Each structure stands twice: as structure tokens, then as C-alpha cells.
Length: 461
Image (cartoon, rainbow, N blue to C red; front, side, top):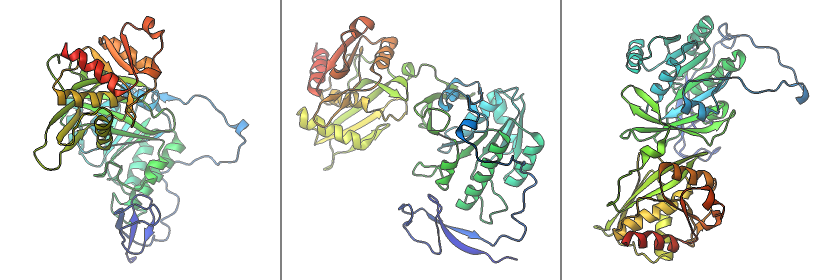
């Protein structure tokens, strides 16, 4: 029997070490080096696998000799999923879906493949039994289709069954549970994930069968395993949201076949996930005439405009150090905006607790929500209601200026569609012809003082 030995591998970059250390010399990350047991590969272990299909011999080609054209895509019968992928699933694409435990990754993929009655799919589960999957399929109401279920964790046997069934789509749930006998370490280790991903990549590129792999994430929010996993796949999708709220966001972090600027919004129901066609109508409170501390921002998620509601609560600090808390918005950026509010607008918040929440449980990174954030904070501090028919968009600079934002026409159109009668926009985005084109009043503002004067003068009437 071959003697085992212990090595230490960085889960971020895959660098190997003879002993453990806190910092990886190659990538500079801390606390990413993990212990891994390996043994020498027996003779003949690297022989060609019978379960792997034979590929064509490659030869160098000039660019003029390479055949080009639009990639053939598979319609997933899900408008939100298709949008994030760039128009559908490309044949031969290797896709990785990550997300927190219990957020709905398996439900999203299972209900998607069950809606494809003419597409032969092999769903491989290393976490659930066939009975559990059947119960979930019946709950989704989509049990009759061409979807095959295989409960297996050995990748060699999985690929053997795959060659027998010859599916049009292969799903692995999850990459951390499968292993190959080529690597002696346990499933989920850096070496196993790297080797299994390489085998699946080879399979999907040789056969042209698209492969969707579900991956776990770490407590820091990154996908568990070596960083090379995200490098070798064609598409990296992130499924996130607050488990205590109804809405889930599907984002694209990497896409070789489309834009990473798109996102899909789902609503979690008992019968599964349902795509939200008009997220703006679900994410804002329409009846808020007597509620202070609320402001509506027109944000862009990718190339999709949505209206979000910024809620703020400002109260006297009980302890010596005032609390600063933010949900759905970057805390450091909120602290910067509070400093601008104090320095440029003259409002003292140094002895105040400030709590900020983006309603609906979604996370917003668009800087055009800055104006709504500081307006909601000031509304709560003064206890003055912002007029309910007013929304706003604009990035706030350190000197208190309202900086221009992109896609201003789409933002104005969305605000008009929802029914708002007035929108505050940066002066640099304002054009005279907009007054005739849009049926909504445009209020150009150059500095935060102008915006506050307009908002809270109307609120006192």
C-alpha cells in the first residue's frame, strides 16, 4: 500500500507547502492554507479513461480558417435566467452557480430543467436522495419530463452513466461533494475540486454538452475551493438575497458569452421561484404620505432600471460611540455620505445613531442611490416627510456636488412608468428637450443643499 503524506494547499491559488503557515506567499491571502492528505499515484492510474469520449486531434489554424458565427443557445423557458446568461444557455458552456446555504440554488436549477420537456437532462445529486428530489419536483408541480436523476458522488461513475444516457444537459449538485479516484484526498478538498472541474471541463468541451455546476460559498461570500475553479468555467453566477425576505437576485460575475451587467430577480414562493417582471412595483412602499426617513432612488442593476426604497432611522446615541448600521448598502460609503452631510450641509450627526436599510432585502452598489440615502437620513433626523410623488437619482461627491449618472433616460422612463410626478436629477444630466419628451417634472440639482431645499421646503407645506 502506498504511504500517505500530508501537504498544505492554498485554497485560493493552489500553491502547495510542506508545512502550514498563516499567509500564502503566492497570492498574499491569510488563513487560506488547508491540510490535504495525498498518496503516490499507483502505476497505470493515469491510463486513458474509458468513460471519457474521444476528442478530435487539434492542429494550429489561422484566424481566417476558424469558423465563426453566433453560438447556439438553449432556451431555458425562464426569462430572468436567459437574460443573465445573455440570451440562453450556450451549448458546450461550463457554468458555475454559487450562493449561500438555503438560498434556493438547487430549487432554481431543478425547476429550470424540469420546465424543459424536450431536453434530456441528467441531474446528479451528491447531497439529496432520489426520493427527496422527487418530493421537491412534485411540490414544484413539474414531475413529468425527460430529466434523469442520479445520486452519485464518484465522478468516474458519473461520466460513465453520462456516456450511456447521452444527455443534452448535465447538472452537478454540488462540486464539493464529488470526487475522483485520481486524487486521494477527501471530497471538497482543493485537489479534488480542481481535478473534478478539469474533467468536467474536458467532457463538456469534447461533447458539446453544457454543464451546470452548483458550488458552496465560504463565510466570506466567495465560492469555496481553489480560485482556479472560477477561472476555468465559462460563466460564474451568484444567487443571493436575504433568506428572511421573498426576493432573490441572480447576478453574473463572469460570462464569456454575454454581458455581466444583467441581473434576474426572483420571488420565493411555496411552489418555487417565480421571476419578477416589474421589480420596482414590489420593492417600494406606495402609501407613505406620513412616513419620514424614506426616499425612493432610481438605480441601475446592469442595464435594468429599478426603483428602490432607502429607509433611514436617526436617533440620539445611548452609548458614547454612536452606532452606524447598514443593510443592503455599503457601510463605508454610508459613513462617507454622513461626513459629507455634516461638512457640506451643516447637519450634526456626531451624537446620533444612524441605521440604514434597503427595503426588499436586496443589495445595491449603484452610486446613483447616494442622493436618496442622504435624503432619507436627513428626513428621519428632521422628522419631515419627503413628498411621496418624488424620486431621485444622483451620485454625491466629497464636496457635496451631485455628479452625473449613466443611462439617465432609462431612469426617467422607469420613474414615469411607475407613476412618479417628479424626479431630481444631476444638473449635468439635464437637457431641455427632456421636458417635452417625458411626462414627468425634471428638477436639476447641482449640490446637496439645493436638493434638500427643494425636498424639505415642499415637505413643510
